[in-house]
Image (cartoon, rainbow, N blue to C red; front, side, top):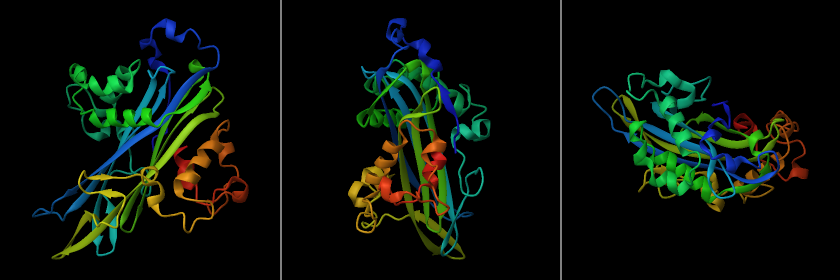
Length: 318
């Protein structure tokens, strides 16, 4: 889980006039954009079929004109295989348990140390700084100008920024005091990978100004292949979170009512309760936000906040 909260170091790229009002409250916009792509890795003579899910996230702070003030991107590559007819196992590097290390966490261990433009995190930082001062449209249109500085493919990062702008929320703050954070956390079930991601802007006192989190769930099918077991993404029509045409996983926010929690949840569908948590977070520190979390992972004052779902994974990304 990435735990970096980045100060607005890239503000030097913005003309001085644009920062003249930094000492007073300003209207800013924040949101989280993400995309999850999967690939079914075919079986070989020495290995059974396996799955890789790449989850890209961008936490973005925009000014009132839609120019990017700061952006944090990260990627988690969740690689899984089957070890028997009912169990999957991660083959990605992990922090502990089933929390896969993101590319930022891997740093030089990601394995691009021989790349002429530097390892992934070096190039990702260049992309983030290049994006500052541009709109989401300009970032999407100008990726080719980056070729002198980076060799990594940036299309998914641009897509995540575009989504962030399309779903942005208004906030108020002193721009010079704001910090952008992004977090990712993964959990592995018997036949499913779960990736929770979140982004927030914090003020100088560590209070949350605005935030959003989301969850991807990749369902799997295990098939016997001789003495081995092949693993593939479950592309059955009933799996609404899987877009088999475009090979992407839909997030819980994308699914909305199709996630199917409303009929059993006391306080509404997942996205409804998730938005309540984000609203509850405003003006609080992370410690304050989850002060009422019980040992079962549910808010002890759930009737007051109208949130009945477990929040432990969301606490981790906050």
